[in-house]
Length: 379
Picture 1: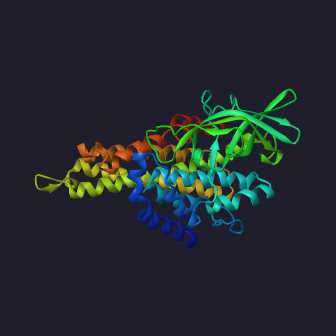
Picture 2 (picture 1 turned 90 degrees about the vertical axis):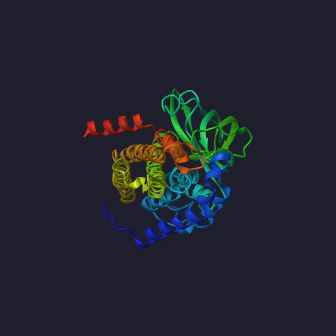
Picture 3 (picture 1 turned 90 degrees about the horizontal axis):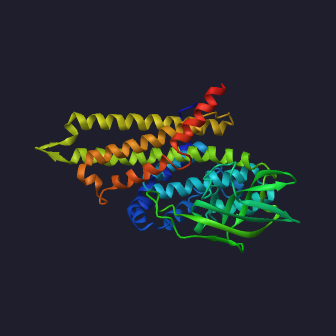
């Protein structure tokens, strides 16, 4: 892997860093407190093309790759995890699957709007009873002439109430067999509705809700890919989603590290900064070392994806390590701030909650370990 970033990648990273500091960070605490969708921040990203990083320039995007997207997400995540989560969703879980599996007509219809921010997308896989168990999806799409009739319930649909299109997965019976298929579902269709925002521990501005689909009638052109290729769409999308989650986790960890080091330098006891205490120095050293390691794993997975190389367990490794590094860094930051770390007046309390969500978001740590072991034991 080449660790030298291209000029285009550096430019996008620096632009995202500037937007994060100037436009996003000042409102992050209020977005979290009020559970408000970060509309202003998302509009700002849209104007900069950051909602379609991998979308070709001919279709309104920046025409860059997964590594460039990960660089952007880390910068945004260091300012507002909710905003970064929405940008990762739009880029890696909506635009990317359309690019890979969509017809030319689907790409022409959806990608320019998604890349420009005129349309937002959401990813609807998880269900209330079966979670993300692919063998137990209760959502069902049946063919009626040239149309599909879709029904089911999806939970934890991030940005669903704000989205214009949902990538929905459902069982599709054919004869005596049932397969899994993916659909691009306009959210304004009759039969589509969203429940109230779920009151989450973290990523509170990345509003999630339950999506109810009551016999929504879809045109035949709503099928993404071919009937029965839903598993392929999921694997591809989730691989990108895990890289995005890893980058977001690195951003959260970095924010916790920065807040903790600044506090340690400024906070004085007995006339000296607490940064002079060895116990504090050990935590600071570990935080920085682990963050660098998580970032490198994330870059490796993103670079492999850009090169078209088989990732194996790389995306899961990056997501596992980065999310646990974020959780540990945020916990250490709270410890360094002591009582102040438990107050909403200080950002590490928010980082602590966001980081914990990252150990569950896009697949729990336990699930990632199972996947990694499965790959390794086949080698």
